[in-house]
Image (tube, rainbow, N blue to C red; front, top):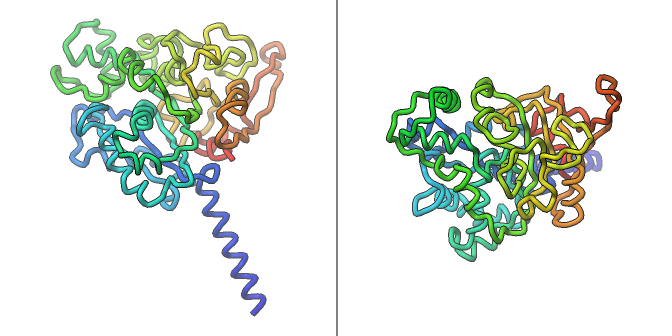
Length: 363
C-alpha cells in the first residue's frame, strides 16, 4: 500500500509539474493575433474565430495548453474602436474568461503585430469596455509584444491610400499587392488598416498608459515580398512592421536598433539610430531582437534564427516595473570574422522557435 501511495504521489507531482510548465512564469496566458489581410477582401462569417485560432497553429505547444491558455480573435475588416468594433468584440470574449477567474492570479498576454495596438487600447479602456467589476479581475502581469504594431506601419498608410484610389506609382501598387496577397478593388472597407496608419496608431491610447510592462521582441528579417516593402517603411523593419513601432519608441524615426548599445545582429556597440531608454513609451522594454527573423516567423514553427538579448532594456525593466522574472541565458562571442568584436547571443536560440525562446526566458 505504501508503494502505491508513493507511486500516486509521484504521479500527482509529475502532473502538477506538467500543469505549471504549461503556464508562463506561473501565469495563465492570453494570445491575441495580428492583422489578417484576407479579411479585407473576404469578410469572415465567424468574426474571425477560425482564422484567429489557426493563426497560432505553429506556436509552441506549451503556450497553447487549453487548461492555461485562451486565444482571443478579431476580424481585420473591423475598426478598432466604436460599438461593434474590435475592442468591443475582445471585451465580449473576455467576459466569460474573466468571470471564470482565469486572470485572478494575473495573466500574461502575448501579442503579435496589430495585437499590440488592440491590447493596448483594451487595457487602457478596460473599465468602459468591461465594467468596473470585471475590469478589476483583468489582472495582467505583463504583455509580451512580438513585432508589435502599436506605433503603426507605413504599409498601412499606403494601403489605405491605395484603397482610396490615391496614386503613389506602380512600384507602390506592386508592393502592396505583394503584402496583401490579393488584387485590391478600390472602394472596399480598409478596416483596421485605418487604425494602423502611423499617425492614427500613435494617437491611440498612448497617454496615461496602465502600469503594465510591455516586453518587446523586434526583428529585421525579410519575407519573400520584403524586397518590395522594405523601401516603403521608415528605418529597418521585418518586412511589415518598422523598428520604431516594434521597439516601442515614442517617435516614428528611422531606427537601426531598439537600444543604443546593441545592434539587432547582436554586436555590442554604440548605435546612433536607436531610441534612448527615455524615448520609449512608458512601460515599454525592448528585450529580444533578431536580425534575420521575419514578421510572420514570430508566431510560426520557425527555427534557425539567431537572437540577441537587449541587456540594457532588461536592466531597466528589472530596476523598475518588474512583474515576472527574466531568465534569459546568453553568451558573448568575440567574432574572428569581425576583428574579434563582441557579439551577444541568446544561447541555442537558433535551434528554437520564438515561442520556445519565450517559454525559456521568463520564470
